[in-house]
Length: 122
View 1 (cartoon, helix red, strand yellow):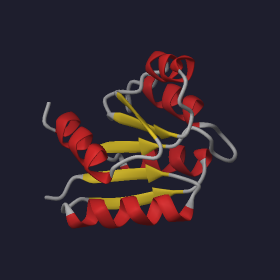
View 2 (tube, one colour; view 1 turned 90 degrees about the horizontal axis):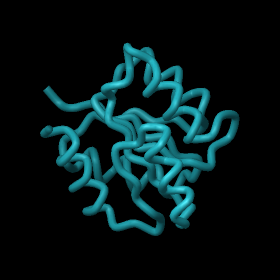
View 3 (cartoon, one colour; view 1 turned 180 degrees about the vertical axis):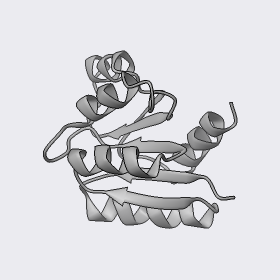
View 4 (cartoon, rainbow, N blue to C red; view 1 turned 90 degrees about the vertical axis):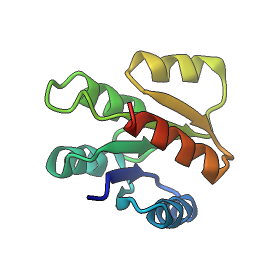
């Protein structure tokens, strides 16, 4: 059965790139374009992994990550933060709220795929 990945990204271009790359790898992809939608989908769809942008409408990625990681039901969903925020403080905060990986934009799709495979095979 295909692993389900929830991508939360407010850039339609980045979202389309990720969707097609992940679909090619055989993953089932669901998408959200804001933080509130991401939280709702995470709770109803229970994805195997999430790729989460930080700068999102409604609820930012840090809050989405923290809300899921501090909830017993969802804390085991691996979360990869994918963001244009590149300083050390942002990455440190990402790890503090529970992100399992932190990838900076611009990114290589292979890097995202490798990280997903690593997190899903643990």
